[in-house]
Structure formats: structure tokens, C-alpha cells
Length: 86
Image (cartoon, rainbow, N blue to C red):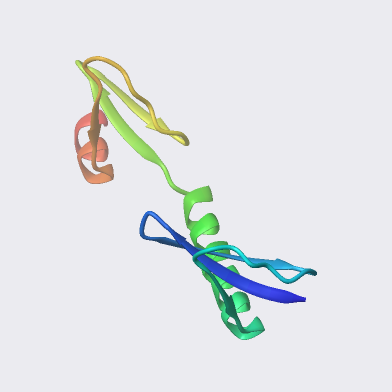
């Protein structure tokens, strides 16, 4: 197995393949570096899985699992949501 990383727009992406890769900007890395990258990505995914989004529109408050957009919708903090919605 071969392990690589590539930077795209300031973000680093790592991948594994059974074949040698010869693309511009792709750098070979160690399995340990790849495993570290995977663990960090797993932690980020876990944190996002439990993330909540809080919004206010006029006198209505929303506690959502996914982001919301629309005219007049204001994203607020959890603290403000709790203080004003209850």
C-alpha cells in the first residue's frame, strides 16, 4: 500500500492506494502519517455529527441538526438561544 498527501486550496488531503501515483503536487507519506490524518478526520466527523445550529427569525427560534439559510434568518449562539427561547 502507498500513502500520499495533496494540498488543495490550503487543505491537506491524504489517501492510500495499491499503485504508485505520479501526479504533480502529490507527496508520498508514511503509514503513520496517513493513520494520524485518518484519526483527525474521524474526530472532526464525530464532532460535526453532534453539532447543533441555532437560529432566530423574528420571534421564532430554531434548534437544528443542519445549517439553515434564508432571508431574515440570524444564526445565534446556544447561550442566546437558551436565554431568549425559554
